[in-house]
Amino acid sequence: QVQLVESGGGLVQAGGSLRLSCAASGLTFSRSSLGWFRQAPGKERESVAAISWGGGSTYYAESVEGRFTISRDNAKNTVYLQMNSLKPEDTAVYYCATGAPLDSIVVLRSRPKYWGQGTPVTVSS
Image (cartoon, rainbow, N blue to C red):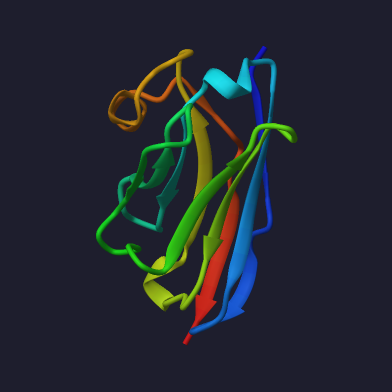
């Protein structure tokens, strides 16, 4: 079955950086769009970034545009989220997600099928 395992979360000061990784298995990675979502305490889960299965299209939430970068390594079946200039409001549990093969990032963002267990990110002020 599809498994997504996130890593790289932790505690960082405002202005710092973290890189999240999500290792995927049980799917045809090169045909899978992937996304990062986050859920802060007391808030709904939101889409943060996504990358298409071909790698040619990306999406970023307005709140992270210019600070976060999503990338993928098909040889390693891994998707990354480089997070720079972190702010306290970025504090959340970050989840990796994917959908059905060849789903666009629009479809992925609206109805992801598979989720990782999440990795917590805490940004102190």
